[in-house]
Image (cartoon, rainbow over all chains, first blue to last red; front, side, top):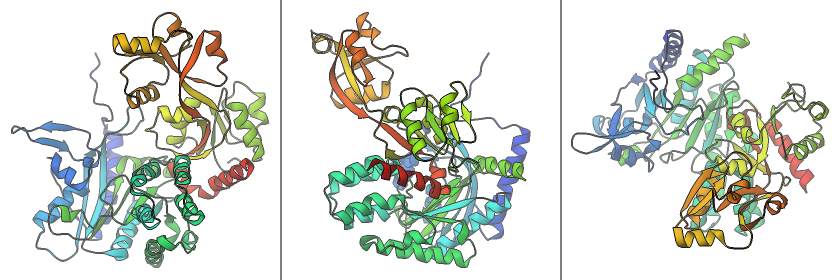
Length: 322
Length: 212
């Protein structure tokens, strides 16, 4: 007799569990030592709370009703619940808040893609530190947490989630074309993007910028070109890069002008973590200065979440290399 | 590690010749692949060969850094998280709706029975096409020769890929609608696209230069 478990979920047996716990403890240990206190929130939230944070309820996969007919959803990330906590429980605090977590989250995944609908996330949120100071702190901390977990070859992609949107507005691209172009970018369809930009009949410079910018990734040289409408965002990225270099992690940074994150709450810098042993990103995050304001008084904030199972795959590969 | 520094997923079948010619143009040695029909993995050249529809799977998971496959495969599985970097131009074919020549079996089925029965291997593309054009459809998923389905009365028409229309004509079918033109595409794993940016960009630039 077969007793199946839901698609995208799994059982973890003792050998693997021991290793997962060890990695989680190293990650969380690094965060705790840096002054980030661990926080726990309910696994179920009212769906409208998730929707207040992101139009797609951050891709929540499982919904149910409570005894009053209210729609509940299993949390799809920890950032929205933490934004809710900060706005309600820490409403009077004005000092920076440093929070970390280690918890399961649930998201929609395609069937048979081998991706997990239930996944364990360990991450940090830094509230009340605006600009590159906050971003440099969480990036540096995450990189050293991964190092403590046994990784050696990990890198972080750093971009600006609002860059392309601003570019479209600055280059007078008609409003009705924005959505299609942004969709192409988030689907990583660069062929479709080029075709649609060409169809707009823009001036050569504008066309080249819209087509070429998403392909620019690498060291600080990607910021060198004087790109009129993008100049302000590029200057901000340069500031962040310099702050990261000053903290000694410049060689782990990949500046990526095409980096976009699917979640709608990011307002500026966005991050994605990579390791050569894993075909998927290990995690990601960014700055979300408007999110807490949707639940109460606005406060600048940024954070990063890591997928512990993927970090485990990278760590196991690293062990094999030695 | 191969000369290109990358693992390349090469499709077997109709796109294989064009793909290997393209790799030759990049200075990648494909002689071994051409001379051995059964071997699948060619470590020195950095080439792995597979069905075109498996290419996005290997690339998405990072088992191959880049790959070549048809746009039809990418349209059929839009959820795959891969970069689509270049339209390579070769392997051109048309995704079409076809039905038996002469009478109008599709129009007749829609008018009298309120829906079309369509056989296809491309259920996602077919669903989207008929939804977009406002027609109800009953899809029959077949795996082998789709052309047989309307001849036996299983369905009213088919959605399939055709290059010359020869197979359709030989089975008494004709194209009634063109859905989309499909060509070979270069795709890349999102992590490789960042970590091996220089290697991937070198290939993209040379392919772009060759195309012009």
